[in-house]
Image 1 (cartoon, rainbow over the protein chains, first blue to last red):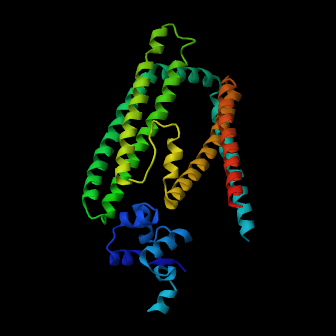
Image 2 (spheres, chains in turn brown, green):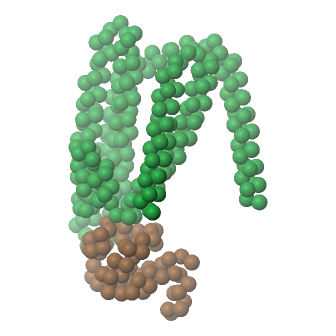
Image 3 (cartoon, one colour):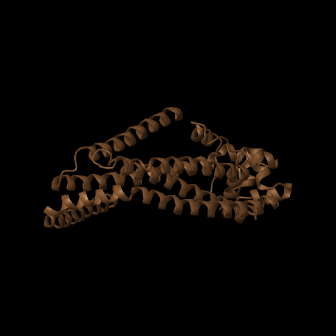
Length: 72
Length: 250
């Protein structure tokens, strides 16, 4: 069950670019890019920080692939 | 089943190594008498050519670094002028800078090695002045490389403003690492592991080569002691770092 995320979607909705989001959560632009592409799974701490910036619950931003069907 | 397969693989590896070792030993044995003179000739040639090889390395690595620096700067300018969403250009700039730094790191190692080779003729050379010739180009190369590396660091900081540390600072690596986030630290860890594994393998192979050479001709104890020191330092430092890491996790 791969971990997927909706960081790009939330970020666009908030009008932030990768650098700006990175600054808010203490990560680099490159790391945000890697997370969005699914090439890096963030730690719980970073994932929580990202969800907090979006004002969302952790599992709304990060979830296991299987859950996608349940949401649809 | 898995253990059985692993055991078979290990046994095959041992047999393969035995066969290769035997073949190499036979080949070397066939040319037993010529090994010593050939090595001496190669050493003499290397000592005489070290200066030119150092300059050649400087030109090649310097040109490559300059090319990647220009390409990186161009890509970075495009990426930074955009809305921050152009991942391809950001990645390209990053990659060019990494290649450039790689070329400069290789040049630093080559400069030191070739300078050492050149100066090693000091004890036996008739013309001492010729042996000391590489001193000037060596210092020019080392300090020149550092100056160019500083430009790469500065350029990288434009892409990643959160990065800290100056190349002239003795704690540069620590400060740079501290300013990295979790993903970057993981990348550094992965790279360090690959470097450690590769070095360990290289050390073992070099030991085999040195032992074979030691049997056939007089290479002295210095090469094997040097290699042993490198191996020991690597093993002990890895063990210490791993132990400290375990303590931190507790």
